Length: 384
Image (tube, rainbow, N blue to C red; front, top):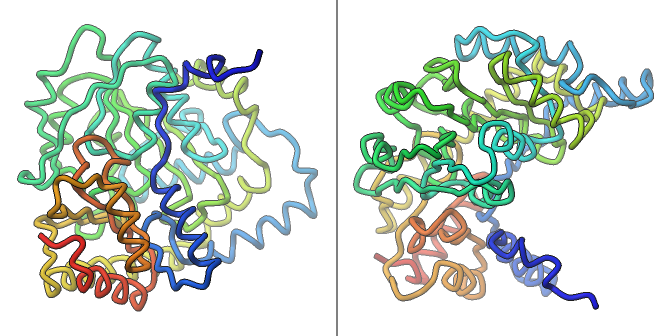
């Protein structure tokens, strides 16, 4: 007999609620509704032209076969150069492992550092997949709350109280999803002083609008840094990510990657090489536009009586506390979508600490953002 008992061990793995909002938004669009999308963190720009040209050339010259499990040498060398030039961090090519997107690398990092039954600390709120990936690895997630009153900065003194003999790693994301907050230098130094391995999701590192981009590797070598091409390079569907580990950890990481993925797609890696070599100006122009949108969103929210009460300085998100504490964020987002045609993400996607909030992504045009915020304000569904 086939039943759900065969898959019940995955019951603790939650769904991505923003996807359900997106699915309903598509249904409404198919019915002719005008929908403004602010639920996803996907750049509305095209990938750098150099990426497509590199793929064309690669497909002409190569058979798109397997590569070294850590990635082609030229790409790993370019990543080394990037970390030296952009973050002031010296690494070696053998410390880099390239894969098909950064999500698989988060899972690999948890498996690398945290045996089943151990504990990994992560922030609440945090990116929706962190908790689920940790649970899928057979590890217990332990949450450190980020408080609105503290600007969603990480309180390391509070984190220390959560440390146990089972703590194997701490997961951070700065600039972070969903708040857009960049952790301070003081927070980073205090984390490094704990001398516990840190898994640093640096996918938004280059989208730091008020300070220089930063890697946690600047503070501690006991770090697995995860980065990729989805956000700053507007290459979400290309699925190209990489991780950087201490040299002594890489053999274990490479063995696991061989079994999970073998290697990343060759022509996509070639595109990554070309983008890192040639597309700096294109990417910086996108970053400038994102910052313009950030400033516009914060100003417009205040003008509309919807001050978020803190200042995000990175990524392309802002979360907003709504007034009706009795209503779940998911139900509210569905209501907002149906009544205003604006798709936004429920805070519950990002942890219990974000219930009572919604997340706006400003990875859409200024015109659409303005129309969306006006609709939201006029609906009074989020009114404080």
